[in-house]
Image 1 (cartoon, helix red, strand yellow):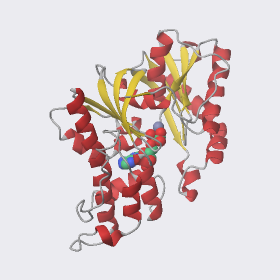
Image 2 (cartoon, protein in one colour):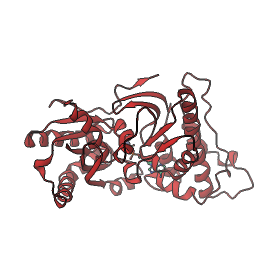
Image 3 (cartoon, protein in one colour):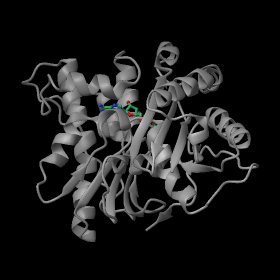
Image 4 (tube, protein in one colour):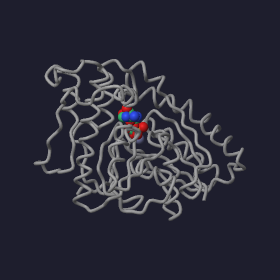
Length: 338
Ligand code: KG4
Ligand code: ZN
């Protein structure tokens, strides 16, 4: 079954054709970063307008690549599209495109959860048996989850304030490092000393959510009161600030993940979302030989249509189609919190 995936939830406009939920036939990701850079963050109104401009050229490009591999419009069996969570105005552009294509091609479509799709991304390369611990770390969400199947996850813990990627972006913005900040901090951190500053770990162990994390304290420590956390011996450089911030930001998650693995007895860990591209996170989890760790390839960590087509295949295969009056939602719906 050949599925067309459409992703427009934030600042990436992306289409992909994926066969049977695994093999990527064609994939195009067009980023809007250059339009949002002057504002150091995504401007929702600009994002939705740019999606309207970009969506048809990106779709055509995806179909041109498919044509070189012998596939055409008539080979599309179904369509998947991100409908939540995300920026409403941007999601609507992709959803309406999906509805139009569904009607004109006479094939079903399904709206899918963007978070579940991120956690499905590593399945595009190989079949990973369920259940596994899913670490979802993006610009909008940080969650430690138990993934029981492609559409059944239980949230074990989450950030109680800023998302992990958001903290990277805000720290980068404060130091004038540009947008998006995660990648820049990651690069600078490689040249810095992660122990030059002792930024605070959030200590939420005693709270109701033993796997929850918090980023506002760390973010404020990295932005303000630098002297308070500086070890006084190392150089006060941006590389050292980035490396020290990154260490605490990622170790906080890894510690909670270790606890979740010990408590649940699940030793397979799958990461997804933009922060899953972070080299320190990849190294930290990779240093755990007792876990089977799966990361998506770098291009499938950030938002992309392939993960949408991949997960949509399973719904379409089970004839779970969406109606034409489906809407979008800015927030996550329907996750069980345990
Ligand atoms: O999943 P994604 O593309 O969009 C959302 O669904 O939010 O994630 C974007 C986030 C941004 O906050 C960005 O700064 C962060 O992922 N990011 C990184 C890295 N690459 C992207 N954070 C840390 N290290 C990276 N290498
Ligand atoms: Zn995302």
